[in-house]
Amino acid sequence: GQQLNQSPQSMFIQEGEDVSMNCTSSSIFNTWLWYKQEPGEGPVLLIALYKAGELTSNGRLTAQFGITRKDSFLNISASIPSDVGIYFCAGSSAGSYQLTFGKGTKLSVIP
Amino acid sequence: DAGVIQSPRHEVTEMGQEVTLRCKPISGHNSLFWYRQTMMRGLELLIYFNNNVPIDDSGMPEDRFSAKMPNASFSTLKIQPSEPRDSAVYFCASSLRDNTLAYFGPGTRLLVL
Image (cartoon, rainbow over the protein chains, first blue to last red):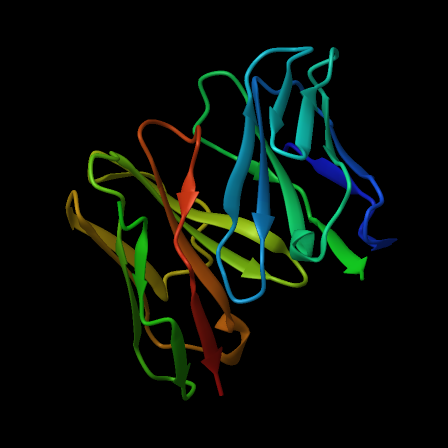
């Protein structure tokens, strides 16, 4: 089946620093989604990407749909304490209802 | 919009007991998903409904698990009998169509003793 490798597994950064994380897939995806999950809550959709090369921003968050359609990147600029959480990438293939999720990147921000 | 609503938020039960988890999807969404999240396996899709019809239940662990969607605004996931290895967070998610832009509920944290 499809596999998503998400890295890094965890990050400890200083407040104000920029953050980068990525996902790579064993197969081509037509949609990439990025979610954030905070303790005790469900994943919240942050950004959706639909075309290869697409670059989309949501405030301080920017995500890109890789040209090969097998990867995606999420960047967070000028991190703040409330950015803490687990960030998940998810992808789906054309005509598929199946979302494949990465294992998540746990972000900790040191004030 | 209230978002996806799940109940209960927490459930502690003893092995062998029946557990029923409930979900109300976002109004107007016609796709509903049940996921299970554990540290070891991450987020796993258990079952997918489209227009109240189960389309794919291949992720349901075993016959002890069953799910229903009697109407567009309500779904249940039942575990009978429950076992300690069923302890996990169970999420319900809904979307307008297929799996694009799936919105998750807050989850039910299940602990089977």
